[in-house]
Amino acid sequence: MNQYKKPLPEIQPYSETFWEGTKNRKLLVQHCNDCDSHIFYPRRECPECWSKNLDWVESSGKAIIYAFSITYEGVEEIFAEDLPIVLAWVDLPEGIRMQTNIIDCDPKNVEIGMQVQVIFKDVTDEITLPYFTPIQN
Image (tube, rainbow, N blue to C red; front, side, top):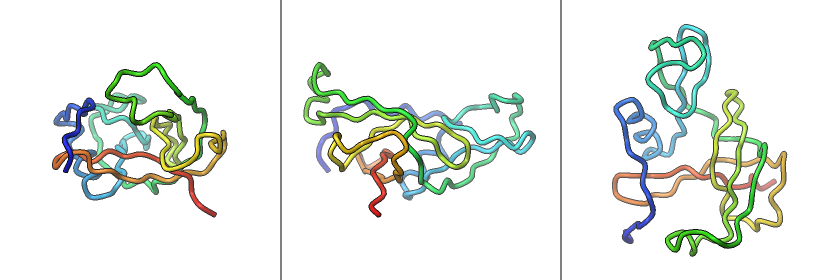
């Protein structure tokens, strides 16, 4: 595997399950057993009711683009090879809005309301990152 030079996530005890899921090509989200909320990004307690009674559920991995921005220039050198970069907020059916990159498509074709699905890329032997790509009809 090539040497990955971009920043990597710092895995915390409360986010280990999420990162184990991505290694196994699963998008896991937390679920509060007390108030039935779904939670993303991983946390120690529910942001709705402050309960620590959390578990994990597998997301469908499908989402709809809520908002996006395209960056064509002006990034740090380590990100230049990724230009143009499509940064988006996507809404998952579990009620979660997640920030992500939209990849493997022409940025001119990205639009609000577009259906996307999660894909996973191994960036190191330990870390697999989730991205989203348009669903091909």
